[in-house]
Image 1 (cartoon, rainbow, N blue to C red):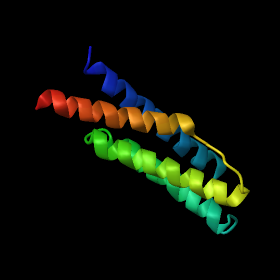
Image 2: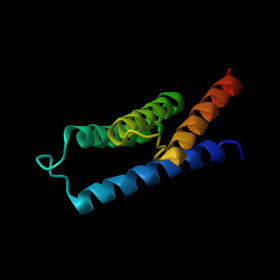
Image 3: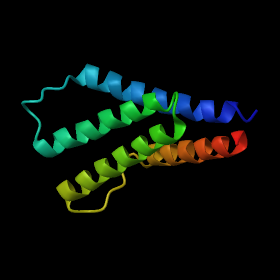
Image 4: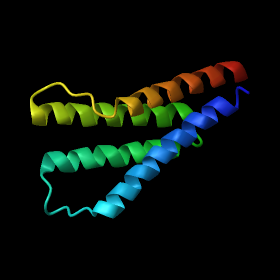
Length: 110
């Protein structure tokens, strides 16, 4: 039962990453039409996608990349809008859970 829970969170992260990929393909990314701050946010989303892929083999590293990318996305969003926003908070929670489960799994294996 325990082995299924980390796998479930990895699958959820990969599905969210796949959703972003489908969105970017459907909308099309024209780098000439977006501002530099929006480009930084797109880079943060791609970093989240990379972190989701890394969680397949390295839970803690992938979760850390997911958390850092969403935090950076929100910092950029706060700078742009001049107000506090917490976009994609559920992805942030997902990354934290992946880190916790990775640490717990390492502790059990030791």
